Image 1 (cartoon, rainbow, N blue to C red):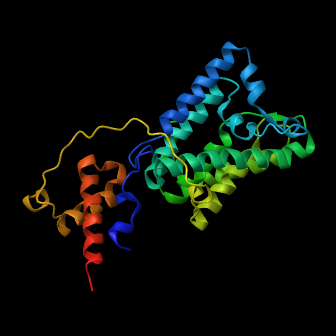
Image 2: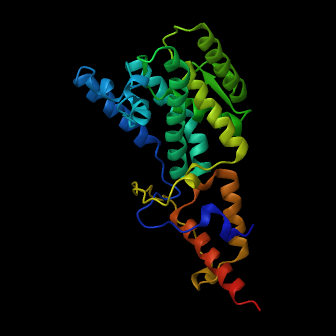
Image 3: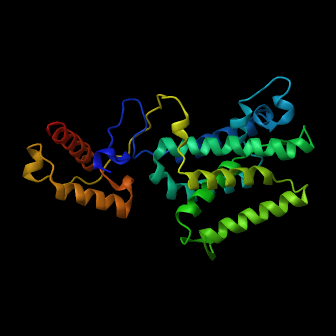
Length: 281
């Protein structure tokens, strides 16, 4: 694969998320905002956005398949979900970039909701659920698939590798689902986990399933370091050594570590490569 085929050196299109943007703070901020508005409205928001089978028949309020994932019942509920989203999401968002990570997260919420409807809703049509746990479960499992041996501190004390944490999480949800009446939407958690597992194994990309859309441009992160450009690069020729150095930096530190100047160099190198290939006979 040539460097011009790599995702991380493709040019950003106007009006779309940049490769080095992050959507995690925006997701967390929206969840917190909805939580505060719900508190101020004495639960009216949660009643409008919660997901249950009753809300999809006979009048299909399909927006609830997404909105339920942005509602929470109490402070502990939202804190644990948003902390977990930040903790695990920061590992995988640079891999998939902001647009795909957002699409994956929303798809995880929808699929988790469908799993809840298919399992719990089949038993009690009026049973409803709220919370980001299904989407967060998908992010957690995806992170464990990519970084199985990375250790985190459970309760800030107990060290455990991500692969074992993921296994424990799935087993607890299976036991909770089998026991019933736990007050936790274990079926939604398992739906998100299953989606993440299949997504990783099959190399899926949610954006490939969608038509071309214009995404909002989020605030850019300003580069704090400027790089020195050799004389040949100032003349418009990007050396192979420079490209190799930048690709090595991406490999070691992640794409998000690139400054705007370094990213521009990779884009220029891509164009330069295409031009040379086009002139061959």
